[in-house]
Length: 435
Image 1 (cartoon, helix red, strand yellow):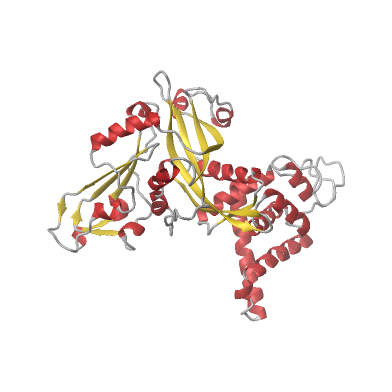
Image 2 (cartoon, rainbow, N blue to C red):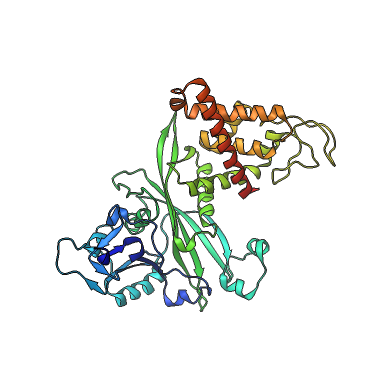
């Protein structure tokens, strides 16, 4: 049977197709074609195998903006009529809208037309810019300087726009049916959202790039999206839970995930009806992305850092002139400074006030505070080290109470210490990314 078995993840090839005019604005190393999914088990079964074909290629293409779809199934050989041969197209067709193209010429014509007509729906909530790869080839500036001095009107600048939508946004329900397949293909355990649940909210990220030829029309290209669901938060607000989050493969490892997450967070902070942003069962990679961006936000908050650590705090979170919570004058310092609210141990009332103001979920904010204390902790301060250890262990004990309560006292202490050391090691890993 092995000869007639195909790996579904390798057989399924995805492409984001641009019109010819839009392709002319691409850099030499840019490619949006022929990438593969991480998962296909929701479609083709737990073992992600397809039986009955040799050299199977499932060619699924999307118009880069409108996400109109084209599906073609090709193979060199197929087993004769048999109930064991998988229906490749029929199975996948059950997960995408029925208006997909099977004629390549008709699809490419549709791509060209919809490249011009497609515009994102919903409310524009954020935007950012990046240098065009073509500008990079010309050597126009470099690094951070080039990122910070971009003219949105220039042909050498690519804009990225973030939109908020709901089921009530005109045309969004149909658009969502085209993009939701990416949840199955890229999120382990991902599933389709029930359209009958009215309260879902969505945040979508698009690339907006100008064509090189006059009149330099700007066209939109789908990058990724996130879905959020509101839950009641006493007495009269909601807790917004981030449920799904995906950036398409060609756009990964370019910082777009962080931009989308930060846009969502800033949008939440501006909404008076939202008490906090939470995340549903985050994958490890997303947890790192969240930690990194939350930490950067706190380190850049001068009032928070000054109250937290006392004395004068630099923009990056470090001590200025060696002045810190120890009350001693450091190298270049000017004398005594007050102890900050971070301690350790951290002032719980102060932490809770800031948590509410910043609309960050309880456990996440406690972890962030623990990381920041660790960043500033003096390895020679025995009292501080002990206070920090007890602070972290108290949270871990509360979080894992049901499991730890079943253990004998000595074993409980051993497990807590083991978990504390593991957590501290992970904190160092995250801090190394940020600081």
